[in-house]
Image: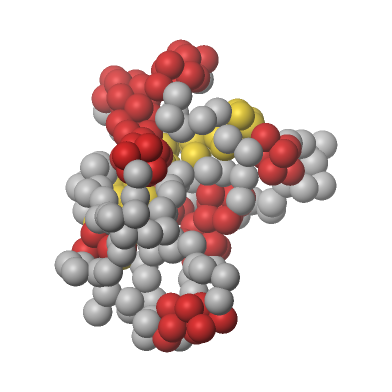
Length: 227
């Protein structure tokens, strides 16, 4: 009998039978994508997150395998790939935005940001891509900042996407100020922030066979911020 927490699957399911892995899966976009993949018929979603407490909220959901893992841990990631070899969809969702300009950023902070936002993708892709190549199929979706599509954004770090298939969503931690929050939202033509579910819907498309002719593409989902 299916768990009461299991999302109802679509019929026949755009991801029917696919085995997926999602990083930063315990909350926000990552969690919404885990649930969306299940609704669309994924047979397995490996939910990876460093936050063990929040990751536990996904335990007991049919089709979810939780893994408490730091995305900077290359050795741990390769061990995971040996344990779970047959992955059809890899979604690198983990990300970090440092607050502050280059003058106030320490080398340690710079390294942490690069390790989470870029090097983690290298680790996961290198670990899971070989089996995709053997099967001649698979989907890799990488999350990055929409800032990489613009020039001269004050106090923002630009990250280069390294995607086989990639899309972008602005993931900015807002400062604790109503003024900053209002100004940030006003920068979007739609006048609001995206919901995690809206981003997850794009992920479903990219993970599905409907996106079979996409490769190396960039999909920007930002409410018109980059226009």
